[in-house]
Length: 272
Length: 353
Image (cartoon, rainbow over the protein chains, first blue to last red):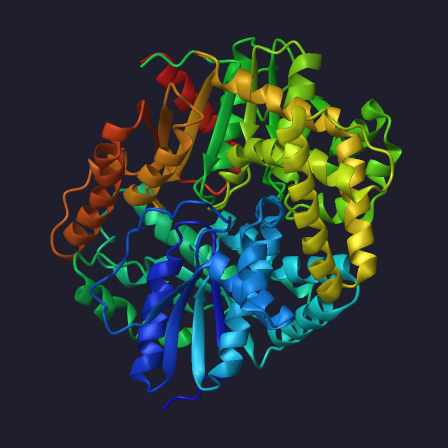
């Protein structure tokens, strides 16, 4: 079994870069290496009175990958119950209009609730590796800042202590690894680098950029292509040479899930 | 499809799709045609500032741009506003006579880029600027990410927060003097008592886990916000304006590089409530014009097929659900300035459809 240096992998990147596919593939790869890995997503960030319509499940064919979508209300209730020692009080609180408006007013609050629930579960299952398919970049930063902001707001007390503990785990590079996915374009790389810098400003994260949708392996296919398409590969190479030795996941022309696995599976090993 | 401008043009999308570039190109095109335009961004990444050569020091102020790149100077300057939450709060504090609003610790944290008040503040700023200026069009570039719809939810937040129930909260807590809306008769007073008792209970629980200092600060923040409510409630004026007939274009931006039909459809479903005339899908980075000139075999054919499939899935599959679909080509240079100029041309072409 390949050693997995971290317990929590946070996969982030701009919307649409391929976080879900990559995080699922990575979870699958970890499991094939013998680890107890689960793919995690955060559910809706607001407390709503009616349940949301079921979201599409991408790559449902990869049935061997356990998936966990956290529920905000359940997570909040669970935490409050722990703190107050009363399930009844917890149930009552999360149903008050006041509490719901409070949580919905501050999206950062929902991140703190989700992260708290995730980290608590990781404490209860010390062997489990969690691969978090995080919200898109700006929101990943919000997620990381939220905990620090709330600690600042709370100032002292039991919740403060808990957020402090969460931050310690989050910020520990031997515990948490942040992987920023970026398309191999100049603008995307610049934004990924900005995110990495912003994140470094918060804590010594193990934050690494990985390129996705690389055309490198399509070099011969593009040999006779119109100039603009060859320019795409040329621009990618320029970006990569400027950025040092970054791992790159290939653009896949797969038309079914198993073909996709053949394209991506070996490559995601580089995320560890 | 004729694309005359409308008073409000809102650009939203999941980010990384060229939304800001496309949203910048639109005012550049309109200003080039002599329209009076304001471009507002609430994008924390400040990508726009780089494109327009603006500095952080200019955040919160309207800056007039007289030309863009090598395009001819605009007949009337293009106004650009990099939204700054602290500036908006400061204006609100002044206009409502509540200076504490700009000094409250919790309000300050909430007003940070990802603190949660940004959408509400954007709506308020939009209202302030629209009423102050004399614009043919205000273009709003919303923050990227799956939660960009928080912008739409901002209206609900304002409404929920200033709900009559919270007036009861302040009254029942019996702390500093707060103006209370009169309740209707016995039923109203009873409701008030019940709500009041419930909130006391909630706050006592809160004190146990967060400490009394936080609860005190928090209540003060609520009161300060409540006293400045006039300024907040302005944001609700925007809803009426945005939903008036033919008052707005809502552009959902996606790209062939990164687009997913299912996501676009889901977003449209959520957005349609606020845009009764419909959402227009703007598909950026289309490759089909270039791919048409290529007849590969083998791996090349697989690659071309994969690219075309993505593009068609967006343009065709999503077409049924949208008020319109606009395609914009991929630009093969690295210069953001080139992109804006080329996309402005793209907008012009769509205007002539």
